[in-house]
Image (cartoon, rainbow, N blue to C red; front, side, top):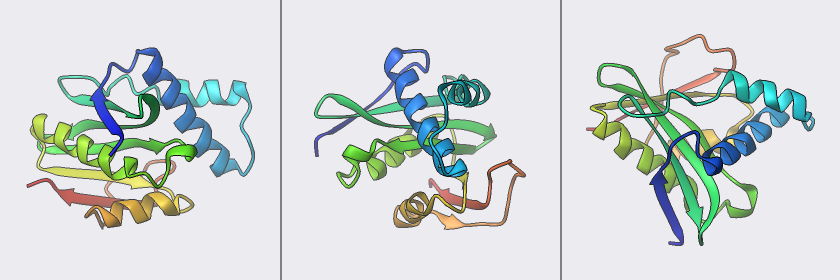
Length: 159
């Protein structure tokens, strides 16, 4: 495997760049068109990931052959429960094992934060994400939030 995953501060330029790439893709897919720079700035401001820091969160960057190629984050949402968020692999690096590796690293980070359960929500149009979560052991569950973009809810026991 050519992936190396490390925890990084969300303010680091590499973290900022990959989160921006993530937000660009999910917003563009949602609207069915490329989003403008101004729109992207607004979406990033709404979801900056500033809570993905210790002691209640972590942000992970995946590098493929040394280049930043993906990310994942986790945050504690209740005692013993973490949320998986911002799972993303750049298109050029998809199919190389990065997404499952990023999810596994986020799960390990959640365990270190004291969580025994990982939850996430996602949209209906993100079919690849839903397939990934099922592949790595997440089961669809009843809704646990009323997030604006939440259409499918998943959970996994981190035992």
